[in-house]
Image (tube, rainbow, N blue to C red; front, side):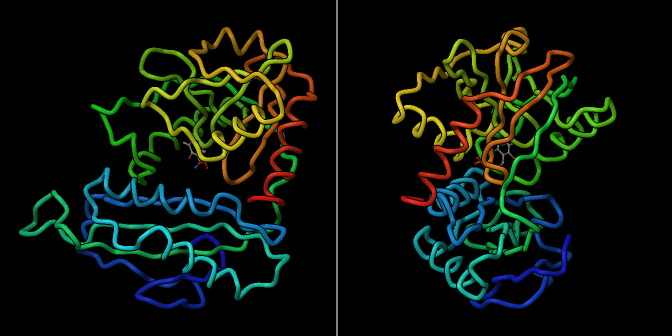
Length: 286
Ligand code: PMP
């Protein structure tokens, strides 16, 4: 319930407004069995909508919530909603599932007892050049034995919220977060890339963090453009030695980083190149 300009798909149809979808006794309300995904609509395009819909179905399965809408059908539902807006609208597209019932007050979601909705929320503008700063945080990404890190699950985000709150309290824009071994994983809300001597480096997916859809898109775009990209283990020290650092996520696509704990990065040519490659791809294939 963040804005007024929201439309909600629920129970087979689109509704105006941010409508109620959950009941007090829903398993999702009680035990937090919710998953979601986030995609964007701007400049008349919805880049990677299909993989975002496919991922929310995989996220549901990871939480033992039965996904009830096939990916292709979900894409059509979203497109039907998008068609009700003028082309110059900028929207956040958020499909969500939650478990309705654990059966006999049980904690394991009952197969097939699933709630589903899609929320379309107008956000003021298309992704644009916001710059951020990073610091460390004492909170880490859990491993799969600790939490369902193979899902984009609502229940993971309170941990990310305390990372972000800690970073903000120190006067920074976001936290550069460690994995269980103390290497760099991601930030509280985006994946991270660094540039050194004209080559690009990003943490290799190790099950601790969300290997994002935008991250994969940037890697493919850069490789197609002949840029060397290394998915590897990266330490905090590596980030202090970087020439450029940028973040990637569905919301902003590319966010330049100007500082990590006192290390200043110049506003760089690679960051601008990755942004240009994304826009070119999004307006042709996306
Ligand atoms: N990591 C976290 C914790 C996120 O919340 C997001 C945003 N969904 C990302 C990474 C970036 O993922 P994507 O590119 O798929 O949006």
